[in-house]
Length: 414
Image 1: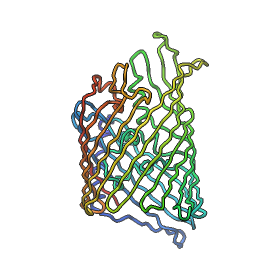
Image 2: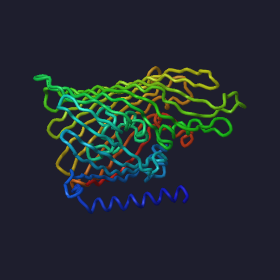
Image 3: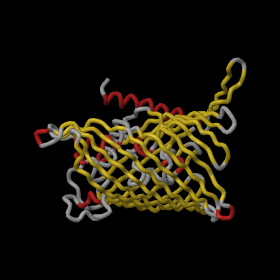
Image 4: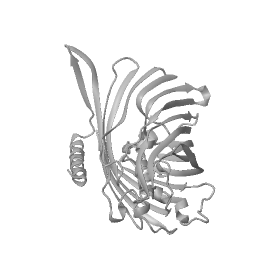
């Protein structure tokens, strides 16, 4: 079967799933298990499916969006059970497509065993969702936010395989601070296993696949450790967060042609460290949010037993947003975000393409909830800069002029 035909087949199946989910309404499914005449704990099933449309001016962004792209899809089914006291087992199968990333391949989004000794300490083992900031652990839960596109410098829709899950475990809990509120924590570690058609791989392919000169080959897994803290303050609805992680030796294989002085088979390595503070305040029908993320990168290449080309770079991004729910079926939200590829040269002075140094985005979202299980969203973006385009070959001519994007999305769940 041709690749395009396979995409069409997967999309037809997903469209059928959307219709079936909508017909089912909001009810989850509970399946009792019976073994040898005894009742085991039941299995609870939930699921969701989303379909969107992205259309942009000037540039292709998150796909071939200048001609309007419907390759903006998510779907997942999860199952859970509580077999013993304090024990929870859950897993989710997930597929998505954003432009040429994801390609509707079904993956294990998470699959874990969770045991809590008490409120102060618990453990999770398996493929766990990596906690970071307000939205990283709930990126796939479209019903949990007003926006269609989260601030992309912080929660890029293409990099789910990098930011989403980790194979390992975590220790978590909630500590009472008495009159000062309470402190929740999660300390995690394990291996990040990247997809060969994920956002990181696609980015490297776009940068490196130059016929007869450079050829990208594959991305490799790497270890990572991190921490997420949340202080739930004595002020009702106000919480402050601090996340951080360190990634050790992310690597990718590529080939440099000796005809241009290259080293042949080469491995690129990058160590990364991230600091990510967050603030969220819920007051009546209002939601106020602000986050900042600072990233440090240490990179070098290795070939023929030699290490060379060491570089250091720092990037950062931030956003502030507010949403207001008028009633149970209508909500309006907005945010402003900025992303910088190099904090030492935020305006790109002296570079060939200054607009690649930054990307600024003002977004406005209208969310409609016709049913508790059905959401429709319409979102507009006014952007300056091109730092997050990544699709260099699809956007060869760039400028500092403003450009625009329209996003539509509908989600059903059970």
